[in-house]
Amino acid sequence: MLSNLHTHTTYCDGADTPERIVLSAIEKGFCSIGFSGHSYTEFDTSYCMTNINGYIKEINNLKEKYKDKIQIYLGVEEDMYGRVDRKYFDYIIGSSHYLYKDGHYYPVDESLDDTKKCYEVCNNDLSLFAESYFSAFTDYILQRKPKIIGHFDILTKYDETEETLLLNNKEYLRIAKRYLNRVIDCGSLFEVNTRAISSGLRAEPYPCRELLYEICKGKGKIILSSDCHCLDDLDSHFDETKLYLKDIGFKTVNILYNGEFTQIPL
Image (cartoon, rainbow, N blue to C red; front, side, top):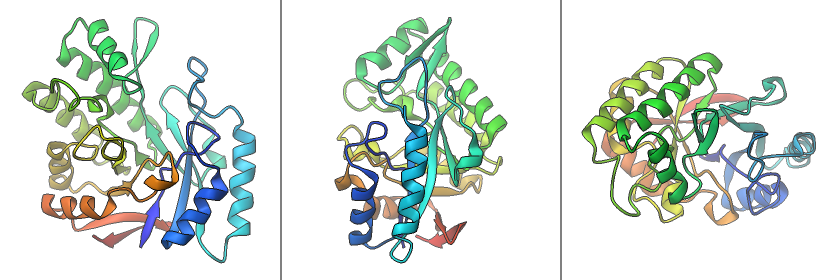
């Protein structure tokens, strides 16, 4: 059963309209599709939704229009610094795209230069960078308990483009695992996100293999998503990622179907 709940449109930084995505999902044989526009962040409006009422109205209209062909869900990708009123949404993906330091918000994933800036404001101390990022993110997760935890280790997005600074760093992995284990039992699903693969930045999805082993060992639950920003990526790298997850030891993955999050075999 094909499904993707992490989907961006022209309401934020996606390339396609919601209806074009719905039609593509139907053509590909999806059983369900969920939209997850970026929540509004007043300090950075370059990528997020500024017409959230229009977004809500259009997705709900599409639900009705295509109800006999596909299940459509209204979600939102809530940045921890741009919270929403969850009563309007079928689910929330809780994410963190920024490092907050000394009164400023620094994007961790927008560009390699921006990621390097995060290192700099942490005195070029990778452990301090990891501690600062994960402590804030896990506090948010435990407080908000989003249904899905989005790209848990997105701060490693550019780690394979030049020198590998974090993924080969034992202290970084120790810190990441410690914070992951703080939230593994909170009831949220860990998103296995293929976006960095389709972007040509990473060979494997988020979270990295070591963290996925930790999730599997701790009996955490997962959901597969493409973090789609264009039609071609709607189910990008799903087949090989399912094999990859089986190799790690996962037996099931969650989908949203008939209004319920349900585990299905990989």
